[in-house]
Image (cartoon, rainbow, N blue to C red):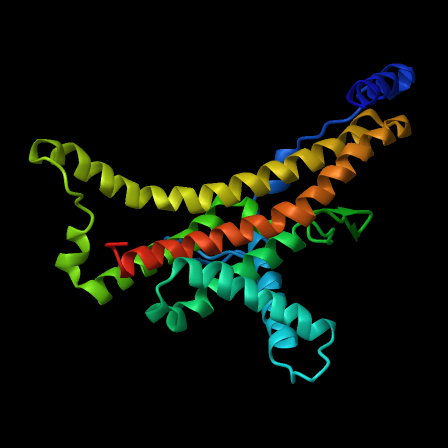
Length: 283
């Protein structure tokens, strides 16, 4: 199958002589942030960019989905809406909150991890839906394109910082500052503590990377590959390259069906685990 696909692609590139590159295309340009509405307050840059617009859309859709699926009257014969709402609630409750949080903290932090799950899922998903929000136009008509706000490191880092601060705030609140920060020091021979303690402190900050970079890298790589597949057709200006759309379509479906949900689940699950480990550091 791979050999046949490679041969088909090679033929598509070599048969029509006029199909060779006549245009320029850089998929990374799709992720550049331009100020659509400049807002500067001193050193703070609060300008509206493409990422901000996608986040606002994701926020509105998350609220609407939550209201539509959760705030409903359950009947004796639940329909699709009730079933979907129950499924999302069950995943957030049993697979994320109960697995990562101690029972005494579930009531307080379940809304947070459930919101993370749904919000990141929605933002990831709309990133694969073509929208006229590229900031470009063709003869006055806005061009359509795909873009994920979570492919911006600033977005994923902001989400990770929320979990990071909540983790240590809860650790201090439940255990007191002395007991909590003392829990960072493992039992080890005193000569090794000078090496182990800095590594433990570094490990706490590495959680920011484990949360933010994982989500950012997965979404960025997925979008670049899809845009690269599609860009080949426009670069070579040949419909003979349409077979390239087959792997592009398969990869697109893989991203939408699997990666979108998995990345949202992992982010929410790790957030629950980090907060839970701070509340009960001995565990």
